[in-house]
Image (cartoon, rainbow, N blue to C red; front, top):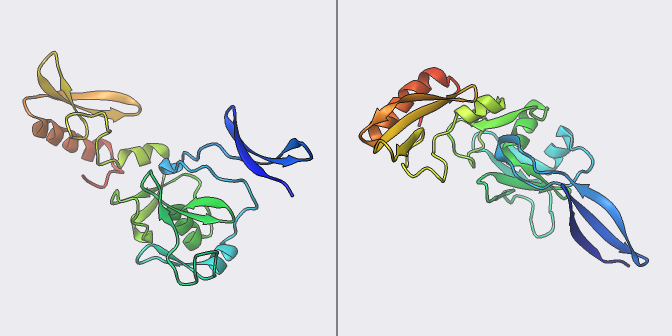
Length: 208
């Protein structure tokens, strides 16, 4: 019988088991999954098939909810699957691997894991109805943002306060470069300018 523990190595997480006075690397945890913000540490194991997924879970594409078809520890058949993670996405653990529910939904319906990001059209990360999901490149996914970053003190997407001018600046990113849209006396006017530009320059955007 042996003990289990985890140790952090540079750039990777390694699970080590104590065997006969020494440590043996059983399996490596992958680096953070950057797809659509899904920052889950996952264990590399046998690839999940669509057939196996449908044996374990039922996906209601009208509600976006997964239901367990088996008893699994404390979880019983008929229970809703998944928990909301710190990043706002729903995660479901299958064979000790955490999958983002929206990526599982895509796989369940299409039979293929998405090669790129899966974007939530209405910006609600827990709304995993299939009609609300679409595959997107990194560029497209970044266009469909409706809320400002945490360090934005203006409270409006695309708007920043300029201390030197004592005005609000509206700007938008195009191909990785910032485009200046003007200076405004109030944040709402600046945001309106940003929204008008976004409708033209960010065609993947679904609206604020």
